Image (cartoon, rainbow, N blue to C red; front, side, top):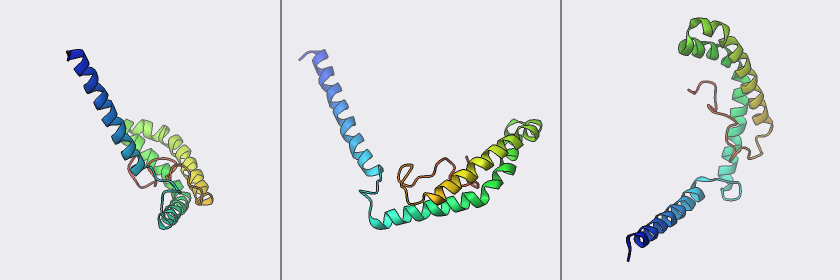
Length: 126
């Protein structure tokens, strides 16, 4: 057998193995309402509802957090002038997404009751 033929066979085997293991990993990692147990669905709904209420109540913490992060990363002057703008924007986004999660806690969107953005809570690191 030629070197080219051996290379083609080895390449095909590697591609087939990668495709087979990717399907197995994807089947294990991807959760849906259909393949989850009732307790998992209820737990995920409760987590989404609690996260929504927490983000609605603590969204205002984004304002001082963004000022601090901007001042630490980009300097005090930028923190004083740009930080409040970022803080105001993130306060609105965090509070609105929290309200949306609290109202739609029973809908498995996005993903399997995943948070709308990261970090899921204001007190977590970005």
